[in-house]
Length: 259
Image (cartoon, rainbow, N blue to C red):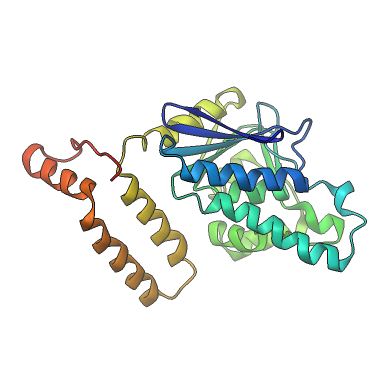
């Protein structure tokens, strides 16, 4: 458990808490702690789903610019790979994940939220990729994950201008999935993923893998991946329990063990 990032677990939901006041700037130390905590959340059997939360006032306002400003090309070429890999550790958690966005999610903060399966935002949230205003571009997935979510034209508008996107617009373009009052963000994010606690964990893992990896390949390759994952689930206890329960009791009555 790190000083800047920690994992809290309650009734099957793990919360990855960013704790670097006042704005959760994404320093190299925070990135490394995020990598470690994401791996822990992925591995723990008592964690069925994950919320990423920056606290009641701000999600994350981006990179630590003071830390980055004096770096050379050689420095950044190495650091950018480390940054991307720490975020990818979150994206690859094989469980449902949701970002609980309060206040600002800017630059690396938005890129972090894009690594989650879902996003819940407060109605006062501001999201954006303002790196262009610093003379650079997003370096932790913003040019790749954002267009896959909202489409290339909208992504280019957000990245080219560096403007802030309000919560209502973010909802309208699919950048976030739900908008609620700021005080309700964390509870709403928990409720969104708590439905997966006690679910068929291996099937959820397979579904996430099929969708995420399938987006990066051609259709035939994606269908081949889906076939393999689909067939593999017939070796699980949950498949047997789910189909037996359906035959005997109808849909939605199965008890799963995650095996």
